[in-house]
Image 1 (cartoon, rainbow, N blue to C red):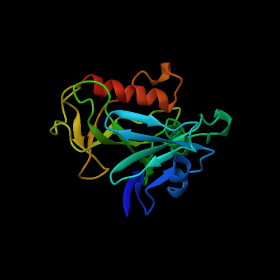
Image 2: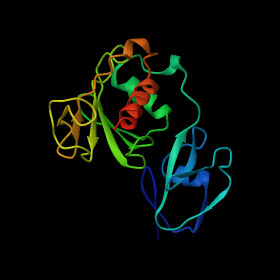
Image 3: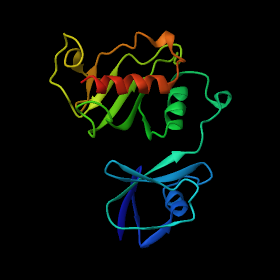
Length: 196
């Protein structure tokens, strides 16, 4: 039995499958997604190559990337559904909780924490995209708790997302000067990591 991951752990008895078959086994429609293999920091894309066979072995990791953005006219109007749809369009695997809580896996690509894998959580306001989430919830803990002070090590609090998370109080004060998209919020998150 070969074990691998496409968003969630998968198993197969086959030693090779096409990229599209791997997607289908993980319940992703190949007409809407393509497969990307993750090897450390390297990414091997099977975009346009879904018919190619992939030799499988234990421990392989893949992500499914949505093909093309969903037109704005097809996105939900507001709130957590809009945030999740835009986040998925950027290729993130999203988990939804109660009260607008959204989490997604994130690999830091900037600053001294580059390469670190974390889970980012956000509490999406009901009026998104009019207002952005107030800050990020990070798991595992990166800094010690310090409710006062400035970024990067201050304004770190306990999180309502649970014991594995800490809340970084980082309001996005310039939100009104952006296009008010999740892509703008992710750019803000990247900058938080770049300035650690």
